[in-house]
Structures are given as structure tokens and as C-alpha cells.
Image 1 (cartoon, rainbow, N blue to C red):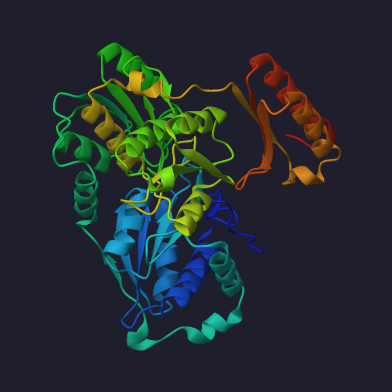
Image 2: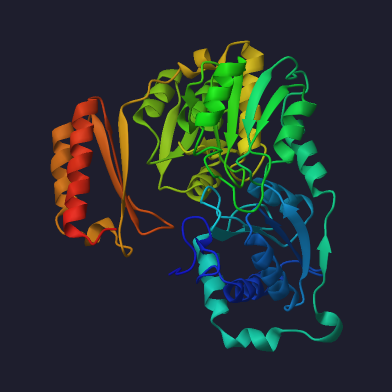
Length: 452
């Protein structure tokens, strides 16, 4: 059983357990031990980060732990999470580490891990790493003298990633004349993303490109698209693109300023891929959070939707197991497996732009391929983590409401993977009905739990 690792790595308030330098150093040692014998050469591990103030201390602690096990460190600096996945594989590193809390506020931080092939680690490997962190046996494995690892800074990492991204865009297309509003959330994409879109010919209005260590995700980026929407409307842009703090998710708005979420992007791209026979098995992989409208739209195209539990890592695992090449989350984690091993916000935006340019249709028209079912989501914050199964009468209450929906809706109740939060999602054909049901479920949780 994993204790430190959640849905997407280790995450928490920086300088408070588990996001302390002591934990980071021990984690670095354990990761180095697990991966240092994977190849017949001197091992090396990449470390990248976003723009949070606390990244400096965690980066140094991780590097120290890794070097203490005789493994070299390649320091990439502020770069998007998917860039670390790409560079880990491209540079033949043994593993990649990302210091980021993704879309969380700046005071939080996290650590995510990639294997040498650019994929996130499976649960059993994370469990093994946790086990080693508590083992005194690692002290006997620490080398001395010339066996200690070195740390190197990689200065051309940004350029490598920019070239890779541009190569995923069709060579016979360009973005000449296209007006884009781009919000980088004052995060890891603040230099990479503008360069990619501008070099492909777009006129880019840039937002969220002045990180100061404390303003990452602050009223900007994928979670707060309002400023971008207003700029699109005022400037007459063709679309807006909002990335989150570590660049692995994207939310876009059409030329009218309407939000186009991950479900709609999946529907648009899946249609294009089906028509061009590029969607493996005509199947899209998404999570239980994706709207029923996506399922209905895919069915109308001759495709199908497979659902996993929440977390892009589980989407990727299902894709790898069955050979599917496209999937994602409503939140904007989109995985184009023909190009990369994980969610990549910039890459996903480029694939969407390619459809727009190829079809010569505005985004608002393309987005009409999917009709969104009414959906409500509530987050109930508890004082301590608790699963839905531990709340008296909650599952029985849900069953009663599911019978009321008569198959014309869904109820999902789950624990957050990173916070003491119970998430309640209800969707269906009748907006008033699902609002009433969701409210009743939230009230039940609040009556039977110690909430904040």
C-alpha cells in the first residue's frame, strides 16, 4: 500500500511533511537505488520543476539524495511536466523527476516520477520506493570517493522540447494569420509555449508569463480562464489557450469566448482521427468524470468510449494495455500517444489547431459536435481523509437516487487523491433534478462527517 504517493505523485504544503527537504532527499536516494542498475552505464536522472518558490529547496534536496547513491543528475530547470517525460526518453536517462503541484496554489508542491521510457510509474514501483525510503539498508549502498554522483545543468533542454512540439504539427500547415490569446498561468510553460505558437506563425497575445515564485495559477491559467475569455472577446482572437502551472493540461475558448473543455477537445479530435482512420480501434479512453455527451457523440461517429478511474496515469495504463492511441480527462489532460507518453497541454492545443486549419472551420462550429449533458460537481472538504464507504448510509442514498434517474444520468462519489475532500458529481438530462440530487448527497455527507 502506498502512503506518500497519491493519484499523481507526492503532494502537499511545501515545508510541511511530506513535502520537506528530508523527505525529498530520502525519496531521491530511493529513486536512484531503484533505477541505477537499469542499464549498463553510469546512471543519470533528470530533474525538472515549475516556477514555485519552494522548487529551489526541493530540487537541491532531491539532487543531493540522488548523487549520494552514485547517480548523476541532469538539471533541466523550469520546464513543463510533459517535457520531462519527453526528455527522459530522448536523452536516454534512467528516470525523470518533476517538482510541481500542477494546478495547486504556489504554497503547495509535489514530486512526480517518470521511468526511462517516459511513462509514469505504476503503483507497485511507487510502493517499492516508499518501502526503501524507510529502510536503513540504503545507507550501506551509498558510495564514497569517485563513486558519488555529479550534477549537470542542461542548457539546451528548452530548444529540444520546442523542436519536438513543432514536429507534431503537420508540415503542410501553418498558423499564419491566426490570432491566439495564450495564458501560461505564470508557470512552467511561460517561455516554451509562446515560442512554439509564434514560430509556427500565429500572432500571440501572452498572459501569465511573468512568474515570481508566488503567482503560479493565481487567478490565471486553465483553472481561471475568465481573463483569457475577456481578452479573446475584446481582441477578436480566433481562440484562447490556457495552460496550467506545469503544462500538462489545457482548456481553450472559441472565438466567441466560450469555454471548450477536455471532453469537447476529445470529441473534435476523435472525429477527425476516425475520418482519417487514425484512431486505433475507434476508441477513446477517458475517466468516469467525462460527460455523458462525449459518449453519445462518439457513438454517433462510430466510435466508443472506455472509462477509467480518475487520473491521467490510469487513462495511459488502459491505453497501453489495449493499444489505444488517444484519451484524456475533462479537466484538459489529453494524451496523444502517437506523439508522447503523457498529457501535454501545448501538444494538445497544436492537434486541435491542426483540425481547425485542416477543416477551415472556426472552433465554435467544431465544438458543436458534442452536446454537454447538465453536470454539477461539489467538493466537500473534511477535517480528515475519509472514503465514501466509511460514511454511514451514503452508498444506500446514492443507490436510491440512481434508481430515480432510471439510467438517464450518473452519480459519482469519490475521495480526492491529494486532499481530504469528497467529490460529488451528478449528471443527467434534467438540470433541476441533478442539482437537487447533488445537494441532497452533499447534505448527507456534511451531516455524517466532520467538515471544515
